[in-house]
Length: 446
Image (cartoon, rainbow, N blue to C red; front, side, top):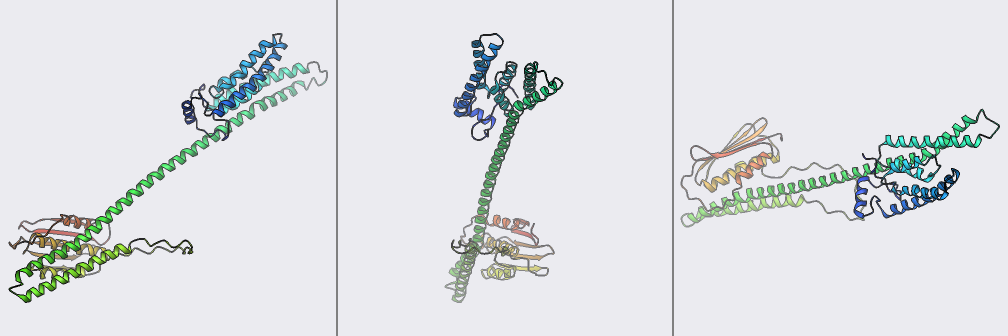
């Protein structure tokens, strides 16, 4: 790093907490050259003025002692003392000027402030140590010469004169060099600590912002998944029940005049299907209402003691035991459906059973929509680690298809349900012109 353009912290309130590059850039933008604040400029001007007055007096005294006009010494002292105004920009140069004026015993304030500024700046420590050593050594030599000159006419203590002179000179050199350097190093270390803490705080703030963004993304993704789940449940309930109702309505229209008894049975079946659809819709709406967060208690009421969170109840829904009733509904609508069960029947979990049930329901609904009159086979298999279901139907026998709207989301919804449990799903046409839907749901979630 350059030793002539080192940044020095502000000496005002705050103890030099301003960061180097930031303060320098701000100072440059504000038009105060290398001063971060106006008060820093005023402080340096005041110190330079005091130093110029001191150096002028000391320079005039030294010039008179060596036989030079005091005015010349005073003028030189003013120039030397005024160098202190450059301490923030060129601290090395200020210290060198102070060292150069040490033999003339001029620039006491210049040396002290210069050493402090040098130690507090970003100048490498080896340069600071070298210049501080030069300043101390020069001060010690001047003190030794001064003491020897003052004690040369003293008749007593000639044996202890030199050791005492050296001891006092060393103490004086340390006293004039050590405190400003140590204070500057302390300010420099404190400024670096503040900068590191500020950088850490900025880093934590950025991390918090990233976490907040990720939390918002997760919340939005959860809302989208919940909307998809609700839409899928609504589709399964409404599409199947309403499809059967449309089929029964078409049959009722065909037999109402020919066979009143059969028409009455179809009408009764329509009512049962409508009631079942309303019941399932109410169940779904009840789940949505109970999943809302409870209202906050009044502020005056005491806070309840914390309790362990209860395990989330499994989602209510249809079970595999109701597959027979589902098949009977399709048979009552005129579809030839056969249900076979392989393996020992056992509970598989509410969510898994609801998923398999919805797959069978949607598959039979598609048969009603797209292959009227076709025969279908539903095969349910209980295996050791999974539940598998296979629904196949043959080609349509030419029976007119009732006008049933289709949203095109049936197969997608079935796939989403199965893959959410880590299972496998496949659907596609068969060689004989029919269609095949198969799903495998593991009993242990993936």
